[in-house]
Length: 375
Image 1: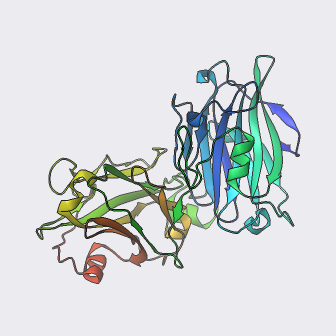
Image 2: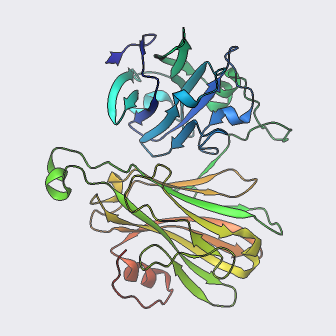
């Protein structure tokens, strides 16, 4: 069912997927709201810096043009009256720059409701797209498409979120993030004795291969997209290692190389992608971490993966880079480097594409010996 702005329809009292589709990159957020239409605190907000709330009822799976929330309606607290979904443009873009924007509600992978935003000429930088809400003990979805100038900050304040400005204050949430681009490819973090647990997430649209058309003949109707995350690690004493699922080289967090791959999504069905953990307590012993990913199966090129890598460092805004480029015949992407510069962390966007491990190794002069492997 297609909805017009302001229209509503009932939804099943089950776990639903709320998906946002856009013609160019957009950030999405969800707000858990109460009787006054406001949040009670930071745990009520789900966004790129906090992809799951405190009771695991709302989970965000980030992408580039395809982002989704899993919402467990039966598990929501009885005092939660609404869950609102928003979209915010990157940088100085406006809604009209997105080319297209829609929100849809899915049950068991089938679309049951959809709202298409008329983006033409819209000057706002942020929108409330829609909301799930209680009415007489039942749940409904309303398509809203209400615009806000000024981006996520005024929109979040509309829902009662305290925003962190230049001077941090207690009980505030930092909505800032850093996007590494061709124009701004690096950022250096402030030096500290310990960086804590550094988490690196690779996420993608796990089932982007369409069920009809050319790709069906190439990969099959239900082929899932499987990307693998990995890292080359060089320590200060010159020792080096490879951390990846291929060859069962999962690394070690507590001991050398102080980098560990937290499992491998071999099915393409894990909603929050794959994670590398870097032991920031041992950063003084690490010289460089080269982060990469390769297409194990499912799509011919990176522009079909909707891939995004986000680096989470404690007490720092999330750092992200998107993989939307790449030659169709080159399934390996060198994504970013974490470099130890006199104790600080320099994060450098790379986004270069290669035919395989050997070619990438040679380009960055690591000097590993490579043999064929499988997982």
